[in-house]
Image: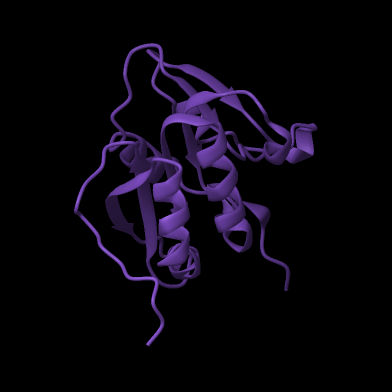
Length: 158
C-alpha cells in the first residue's frame, strides 16, 4: 500500500504554531527551503516578512540557492535534514528553523553543532511536537546568531 503524499506534509495548524515561535522582524526575508506542492510553510510566513520559496519539483533546487536570506525555514526531507541545515547556515543572515525527526536531531550532535558554531549559529530552542499520522516525536529546532549556553557538547569520543 502506497501512502498518500499528503501523509508527509506538515498540517497547517502545526505550521502556524511553529512559525509563531520564530522571532521575525519586519521586512525579514524568509525562504521556505522546500515548499512542497501544498506550500503550507510558504503560505503561512507572516505578512510583515518578504517570503520566498524553493521546491525542486517546481525547478528551484534549495542547494543551488546562492543569495542571502534572513531566515530559512521549513520541514526538509528528514533523510536530507543535515544537508539542508548545512546549506542553510551558508545562506542565512539571522536564523534557521527546521522541523525534523529524531534522526535529524541526532545528525546535529555534537560535531555538527561545532560546525554551526563556527558559522555563528547557536541552537536557541527545541520545540517538541507530534502528529498522530507520524511515528514518534518531532523536533522544531531554531538556530540564530545569539551566542548562549543553552546546550553544551564535547566532540571527544569516549
